[in-house]
Amino acid sequence: MQPYLENTYLQPAGHHKGTDIYRLEGGNFSNRYFIISNQGTRHLLASPEVIGYDSYLAMCGATGDMLGWLRQQNAIGDEADIMTILRGGLNYPLEECCYRNGIRINNMDFVSCERVIRNNQITGLDIRYTKLRAPKDITLMIGDIIASGETLARCIRYIIAEFKRLGGSIRRMVFFTIGGTRAIELFEELTPEFRFHWPEFEGITCIFYEGIFSAYQDKGVTGISWPQIDFFWKDGVISPEFRRYVLSDDDALFEKCIIYDGGARRYEIPDHFHEVTEYWEEIKKVADNFTFKDFLDEKLGYPTPVGFDDWLRLNHYQKLDGKQMNELYIFEREFASRCEDLSIRQIADRRLSEFRAALKSYSK
Image (cartoon, rainbow, N blue to C red):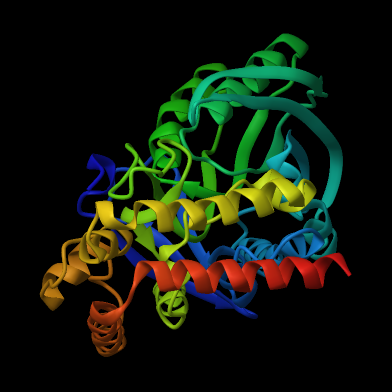
């Protein structure tokens, strides 16, 4: 478990329209961290077949519901500035959802910071384009994927420096993310930097869709995962709704990544198609190099089997409804039991067939 997640737990914070809202509690945090779960984002993160504009639409319900809930809680006001980190940040429907919730957007700014990847490793970052205005006392709203956090750290420090240079100031930041555990560590590091320049800075509200995921630190049991890029459950905090949704499907748990490449999935669909099919083709090639149980344990995030109390602690569910969690625990045990008879090659063949059919349907 990540040190900054020790002793933390999910606390139900509310339900707004179609979205369940949890707050991460128990940590000595400077900021507020939420997990939201909605039918659209569950489907998006469990199904790489959701591509193009559909991937944008899938995020609208959860984003709009959370913004409406934050307004009800007086956690945000009636105006904000949006900063978009190109490319992945364009997937987040912040402007549309603000409009639908009566939040006026004063400025739309942009910064391009792209990863340089060689041999499946991030080797650098490249800022190529910026458009930034710096008003005073603003609510800054951002949506982006956070894996290693290097892109975000560079962009946020650039934004702080530019606001300081231009005489602007930031009152609070609201951040929506399909993101990993590094996000919490990074935001806790950045908050003192905000307050050094602007003592009145109120903090960061970070909203994770469906869970606080982990990025692989190595190539995993298959030997083909991308370190610091691919998301999975281990050492993370997953909403119980998403957990049940994924385990209701025979194959969703075994995908390469929770989101794959968000930019490619929306704007470069042939590249996304290639990445998904390449993964399942490689899985077939290396299937004899690992046991299915090791693969299952890696994807679930713990060695199976595990007792109920330990399962609650590992998943940060200690404060959630005991009856519902026991039902989910049994459901997960039954899923693991069914996996004893599964063949990884059969799963790979099935997923390749399904995904190719989905892409043909999309291209018509």
